[in-house]
Length: 198
Image 1: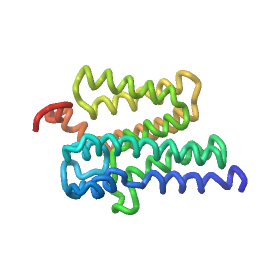
Image 2: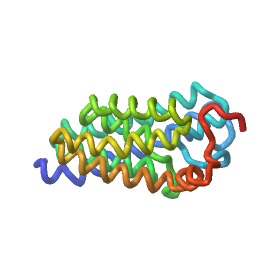
Image 3: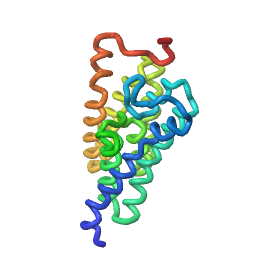
Image 4: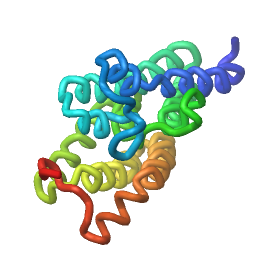
């Protein structure tokens, strides 16, 4: 299969991998209540943490990140850099809008990091450092994710990675959209802080 013909296949591979709902699978295997019935109702690690199972939350974070990394690496091997980027986009869309769960998925932070690891791993470290610094300073997980995701495509562009900058600018816009309720709560001063007792 030629590299051009591989592009839609890469998008599909990425979507299918991205749509694996690790949070839902792991919590069901552990016998907790349906993840979609608690907290925000989404399938990401932050909501898994609301079950009180830190190990499950960590496993969900790892699984969600690695599905993005796997999509990029597999598609890159089969079809080259453009296929890898399309698979990353597909994985992100699959996580946000999984067909198996009526298109209601997670918010995308872990998958964003996983895609970065697969495409240009030093920038995943940059993302995590910005996240940690912002979270330490302000104690808002959502704000930390938003700041890190906004800065990542800017830094990619500044260092000459224009195609990747364009991809991550798109992913950042999607991530911001998925965090729209968090943004409203941040503006209202009602967003939960890291470590706050509910």
